[in-house]
Image (cartoon, rainbow, N blue to C red; front, top):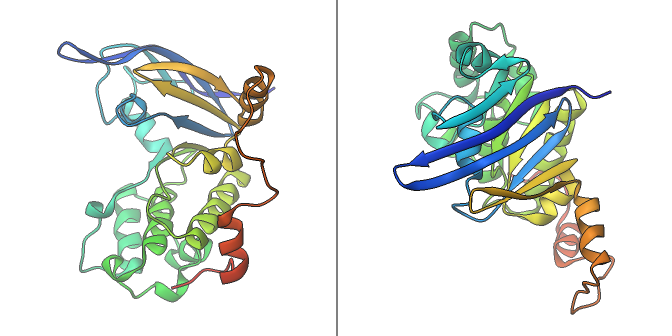
Length: 252
């Protein structure tokens, strides 16, 4: 039986009179890739930030690996990894130096080259973050979430703005991280990405969860209503054509 690693019960977040999160409840199972989907302003980022201990909740209960958010926020911080944005990196340090710096902040012994190998960036070890491509930056950002050997990592729209090769390779990286036993919580606006990566997704709209299931089950439920696409579904799409013609390998 799978273990519940994150439990959210009746979570509310208000900003004055604005009710951003309206009593949502869901569980995340250990070792799964769980997606939070929704339009901008739906409440998904607020929900993640509360679980990550970055934002106070108004009411409700959040448990992370058996730890109560209200009682043990500092202990929760030790077992999670949160994807940093560009502003989180010192501009004059190279990748090896950045990993060493973060390892020191976490009080962890880390082999920078082994971590860079994991994300296919060993050849960029002496490069500065600002000098890399978008895909390389995202892979390095994910690498930094692994420095403290977390049980859970949070990725907020990790493939936004990436070209198709970089996006597909980031999918491979995320799946490899999960294969090593790490639970992954991801937000994305790309539904094909959620369909490929996520074991289950929660769809949030206007502060409420309006659906929660596996992508396959949600699609089957829609089809059972009689829904049909106006265009015949083909065995491939234009992105598949692009990848096939230009190659799936990482490009600098």
